[in-house]
Length: 365
Image 1 (spheres, rainbow, N blue to C red):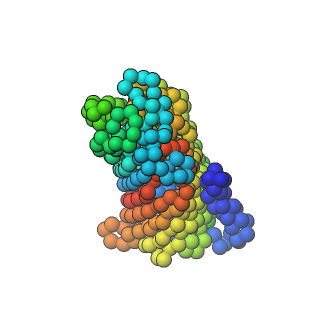
Image 2 (cartoon, rainbow, N blue to C red):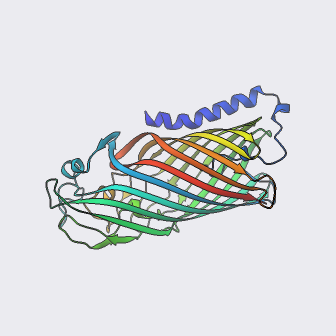
Image 3 (tube, rainbow, N blue to C red):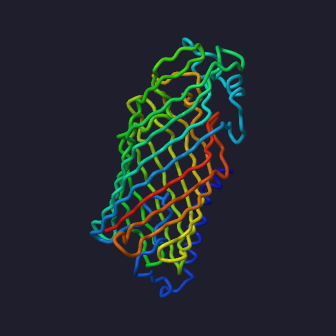
């Protein structure tokens, strides 16, 4: 059911755009000559527009994801249920209990992204984006190999540079008010996959170990990032749809690869003036489980179990764009977008997402 919903998010936007392009007269599609806040997609959408030949754009984004509580599929589960019923894939190895005895309860992820775009021609815009990430995760450790006695709590944290994305946006169609372009990119594995911190084991030890997969900032793999984007304008309205993927090209140096990821989104925005617009967006995503295993990540915690990653999610997001239209800061854009899950179906046990927040700045020249 979720996969159907995921693909529908983009399909609706594309269908609406196609119908509009074929029913409105071309004379009605002339775009406003001056920049407007709603000429750009919501700030959480990357690679949504091309630039004119010779134009540059710089951008900076901050994104926070907050996670709390656990699900198996679509059902909520308690730490006690996980500790007593979910098998540990490492059982049989030294010091490994039969069930998961360490359970994460909360996690925050902060990402700081710097981007640059340059158009060598009207038909092609080049884009590069670098990222720095910080993550923090709270855990409960249950005592020994059985029961629900809590031994204690601990927090792990990481901070490092993430992977770098390079892409080209290639124009496929443009009749002024309706645009379609190809997003052709690659992700370069500049991010760390060897972050460590101190943990509390079920036996009471506090060793420093390589942290599980969600706490690593990078993927460690070269990834293809293909996509396609449609954007339409009419009067004070802007709408669009985008579908993209992250496809792993083999295993990393630690002998695993994260699951391939597929996303589809569609949005609708209304400009109350050239300087201010509001938007609403749906985003569906699906991601596979981890393939392979890092031999240094062995622990009775769900984040170390390779099957308990990925799943499907549908988010509703609401945003605002602001454009400075005069004065010394003319041309500066600010965007904000807040999102909450509508549905989650996780390969769990896995922590569920509570909300996402993206704030960003853009300047073209």
